[in-house]
Length: 633
Ligand SMILES: Nc1ncnc2c1ncn2[C@@H]1O[C@H](COP(=O)(O)OP(=O)(O)OP(=O)(O)O)[C@@H](O)[C@H]1O
Image: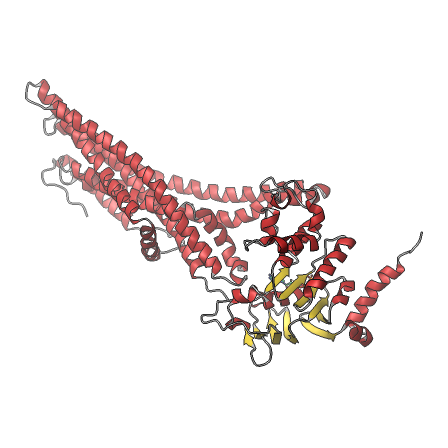
């Protein structure tokens, strides 16, 4: 509550008093919470974030803090120098002694120091940004390394977060530290500038701050909206960006043109964007108009004080220098308080980002690394014991699956689309853990639950050609070796056996040619990409080979060559071949037929044909397609 000086002339009393009361009442009104986190939670995030950031560049942060303190004191010093100079000029004009040269030098020194510390702070920020980015990105990458499975990455709760984290990692840490330093600078500046007003009267800073605060708190509310708008935008913008991508990217261009999709995409894009913009415009305008009365109050207080000081100066109570001081201090204080409210709000935004960062770092994956991994068994036979699994706790897509695949066996897995064949492979690679049952690795007497093994050691024993293999836009060589030490003989065999060798003849630069369009490389055909994925699997010396539709994109000659290569490679290795081309099943020792997540048939090709079940039916169906084809026209 404000107290009014008894020395204040009677007519001036009610005005500041009323304003103080009004301002106090406004300040007591609770602010609507627009941000995700409470102030206490934000402070907890700050307490966790700051030590990490300081630790990554302690000297830089200390230097930046020193500069912020110096910069914070400069405005008050400049204001006082202004007052003293004006009063000095007055004294000199009246024939009294005044050291104006010293004042001018001090003013110039202050201006210079402000400039130097400003530039210095920016240089330091550049260095700090490099440290922070490396540290933050490093922690994100480390976390990725702690996520052996795919569950967290596929969790819809993290889809938006991952995009926000990726975009923010290079800038949020520096933004947070700079905002805090700016905040410290502005608080020091506001306090010291307010202190200069004490020379007018002890009540002056109180009245001024009380008059300006409501507008600034309101302003802060508006800034706080920024984060909610940003979050909202990320959710909406993923949809909108997707539409944009479909309209503009090469990979969709053929269908977009053939099916005349552009008008549809445009209308979807426009309607979503316009709805979003309309909502945001409404919120923004309401907020901005809401600030107006508070700004009027702030203006009234400063104008009132100005009139009062000018009036009293005319009667000789204050010097001309004091009038200059009030003018500059009021302007300075208003700017600083506005900056404080802005920094508090943007700081909140950065802390909200860090809250997401921590949430991701703290995410506990369903698939965890074994704390004390058991050694890999000598023999790598695979056993599923009553395994069931459903994605993200949904209804099971694998149900009560039990089977054993001895090391060295070649097994074909067949079945209709969606039967669970790829899911079975993903479970064997421990991208997910079964919801029920166990997967055991090892021969009799040494079987170990897959969950208890070092998952990376296990995966090093496996090579795979996935149905949706990755297309790394690196050189052909890097695409095959994938960061492993290069062995020229192995590389050349993998390239030839996969059928990639023929394609290389037409590519400038051979194995060192960059592929893919993202960096202006040569693009490969679908089949060539698949051969590349095959070469990758062939290059890896693995004891288990997983082939999920490995020849779907290959021409018949390439398919034959690749299967010959697989047949040679599968000797002595456990091979799982998922395929709809039943002709290729003949290379398998055993066939598993899956239907709706269950194993319905298990035997050799001949046994299953004789049994006359699902497999025999599928075989007949495919064979009849060839038989019915006219042999000669
Ligand atoms: N990441 C995922 N999240 C949720 N559901 C999934 C996911 N992957 C697959 N599914 C679902 O699991 C079921 C089994 O899919 P899976 O890919 O294992 O079948 P598949 O037998 O390999 O089929 P296809 O022959 O078509 O490749 C399907 O119903 C599919 O929709």
